[in-house]
Length: 499
Image (tube, rainbow, N blue to C red; front, side, top):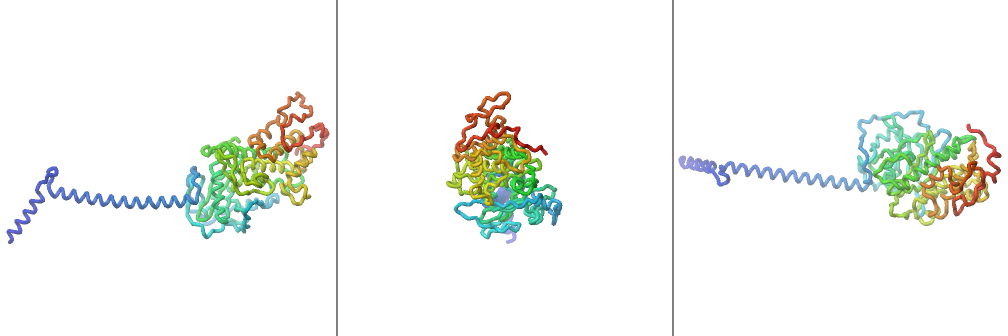
């Protein structure tokens, strides 16, 4: 039996060592190759399974994120904050910046036709919605992402001392970042998802736009239900504060400064209407930019003095695009719920809800009247017949009392020629027929061109002759303004000297 066992082992060994028909390979080599192939196939199947599972998770995460954050922004590099200190001291000398010159907080009055806006109690932070989904969003493709902790430190935990403005949709805080740069942080109130809506609107409207007459949007914060926008800080208040605040017996806003502000604001609106988003940097011309420099066009929908910020050199910056609407190049108007500020809203928009760039032109006309006269668009402290600035303005022009319309706080009155030019622009902008209103680019030209409104007249070298009525552009609601001669001559007018 021992001999039989040995013979069996030898026979098995001979079989393993025997050559096969597969390239003459021995049997044990073929078996080894087969086992190796099976192991490799098993490993590949396992890797494919894991890769497929990870890919599915990523797709779900991207899909969920894109439902909350706009996907149009594609320009910014993500810069995450790390190792932030426990607190950041804010310069005490700047804490009361908003109290400077006795200016108060900006009180917003918003029209909301068909739906009454709920009043919000602001305590320095957005209220969380129970239905909101908490999602961490590190980057949406443009500007800089700021961590919530970083903005809390910058604003002193959203301290009331750092509030520089507030309205129906949020509170704006002055903040000092860790690198020492000063920013304005707009904390959006999350009333029925309003924070998400305004966040998307402002990103779509100006997230990629850079212009010297528009406030720059430099970053954002999107953590959980928190939505915040970070802007460049403009350090000289807004136009409303300088027009209606306590500035003393003589306004620092001279006629030339006021016209500089008017022209700069108009230029910003020009850009918003003929500009493609891939052309993100244009340095020349703010309403004109919105209307004629962007594609799609941007209708601001809330042009008013409190939304015109000023720097130390009185350069205007159009701000607050929370109500803005995009208007495609193939669309003449968009129908939307009427929103804006009392006194500035175009009548056709208020009555029909049909919005286009002409609505902004009307608002700009009211703003220009406000700049010239120093009066609020709606002032209930005045007699009933002159509560509305537009009605008062038309009545004064009809009575040929143009010089009485100039803000009495202006120390040196404008020349009759300059005043007439500004008043004619106002009249054209508030034309009741929206189709007859000028484009913002035309407004810029009319305000800047020395010959307007005299370009149709062949003037003598002395330029002393009074204007014939036919030389003035036709305006449906315009009554010709008296000439220098009718007003008694420029030499008879008492003028103070420049300070």
